[in-house]
Length: 194
Ligand code: ZN
Image 1: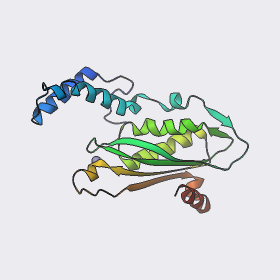
Image 2: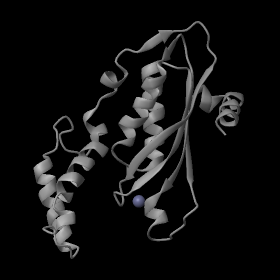
Image 3: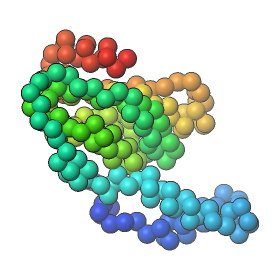
């Protein structure tokens, strides 16, 4: 992706902590007071964790966890908890993600779908792209005939600042394959994840 750093390299937590210390000073804080002494290290550690999706790849996350399946019914994993950071403010957005697909002979392990969601959520994101990336990854990895993903999330950047809309949630969806081309399939999916 354009403009991203070497993704496989672990970030330097000491460097991040030093930047956070500077940030605290600039915000008018005193990083040497008791309560803040360990804050730069904690923030660095937490940011590295919250962005660890950059250092993961799909093949390793899925790790060949497929099961043969004779049927081609719709499989749905509903209400997967989702936590991400918006790329505009680096503030959290959080909510639920539902993933459905119709397999063509192989199904993905249930925990693998949750891991795919985490892999893309633990990056700086916008909700629309996150939704599409999850759909594309499930499609690629499962070889499904169709995939649908719906995310409903609340964005702290909207709730805490700016417009301060406390109760608005945003819903995004991405449909691929038969979920896009077959109206009945799409309707079945959308009614099941409601
Ligand atoms: Zn934002």
